[in-house]
Image 1 (tube, rainbow, N blue to C red):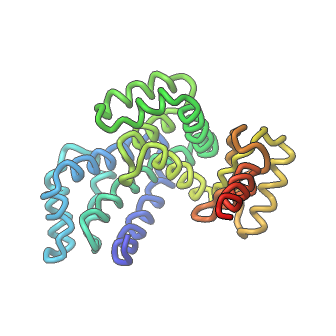
Image 2: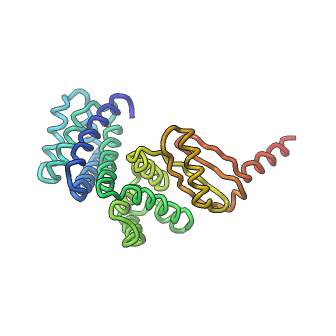
Image 3: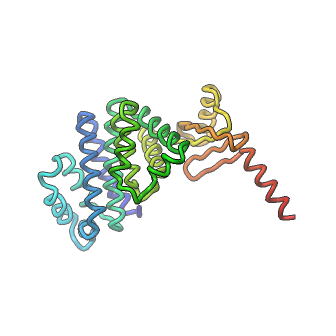
Length: 273
């Protein structure tokens, strides 16, 4: 998002947080679903999306245009949040779409936070991503954008029903729909990071050849927290193909100390001689 869009989103996000603090978790989750439904409408209707982000119109006019259209279709809380979002200044219509989808996701995460389940939701999202990546056939099916999103969502629900919290299942569906224009695995990773951010944490994706013990994982988390000046959650994945060492990714930072990387560099150096 560009600067003006970030400011508009931040103002709406503050409204969401104030609302979530005084509402029941189930009501906040329902509001999140309604915001995501509005996001789907704007994704499917580019002319409407451009109209409600048109800087030539006043914020009040743009908000009225969309909220009048949605009257009776979403609840009053979702309607107020949509009004707050649309009345802001948006650099592009795509920024507005990203903002309303993000606000819907944040509402779902806020509902999990209010129910004291946010840490579990974060972990369930990551673990499901690991299950999918470990099964090439399943990964291919879920990532197939040609297949209807509804069918892929039904498959995911069948896999997760009774094993994950409802908010986790809903967020997996959001990832399958291409949250933020990302691939399924990219969207899932972003949702894990947003869940961590709501708990004022960062996520470290750690790949090792053999699983770290609980004590080793805690020591690594403590070192990374000291390095970044913020609590870091370690999300561990095991990949014997790296042979040894570990790879750590935090945001845009990648620390690759794997044996596989060193062997690859050595082989490349030898072939250049």
